[in-house]
Image 1 (tube, one colour):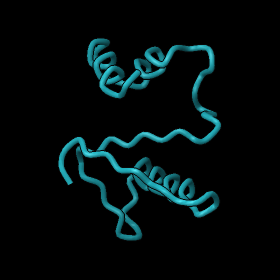
Image 2 (cartoon, rainbow, N blue to C red; image 1 turned 90 degrees about the vertical axis):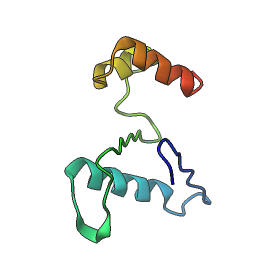
Image 3 (cartoon, rainbow, N blue to C red; image 1 turned 90 degrees about the horizontal axis):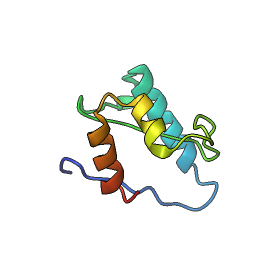
Length: 85
């Protein structure tokens, strides 16, 4: 894999995709090293549940990302544009 590569996780409903992603997010957020899971120090992991429980329904996407990012406004806008928003 190369820098900025993206991964797609495909599977039938109920096959455990969300459980797997939640487990990865937990290991990343708690800096756990069990089960042989290690992250590159430059890894940036983002995860939102299906219902987007942690996301405000009244704020713009830019506002939400600006609050949680240490990037400048310009970088946040550029990243949104690069992601197709």
